[in-house]
Image (cartoon, rainbow, N blue to C red; front, top):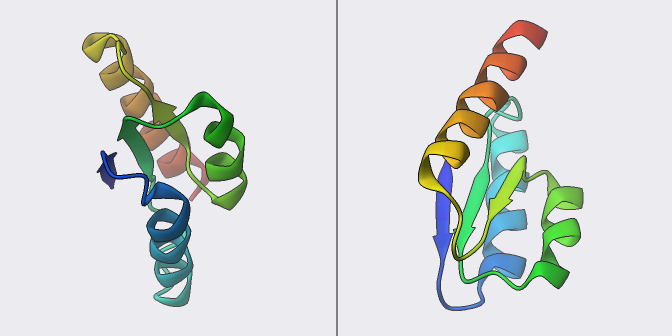
Length: 78
């Protein structure tokens, strides 16, 4: 799941989404966040279960390759 945060709701809504995925037995779903996310929030999001955070200026091709890699890793672990 890719989440774009523009309104600073990432610290509230993303952990709620991950909690719900876990409740639905879907904790293996890769969650990534992009958008206007302050770098100081990255670790908090990762601690909540986010696999990657992509801020402004992220190279789209590099981000896409990283997401593909995360999905492949998750699939191999399953």
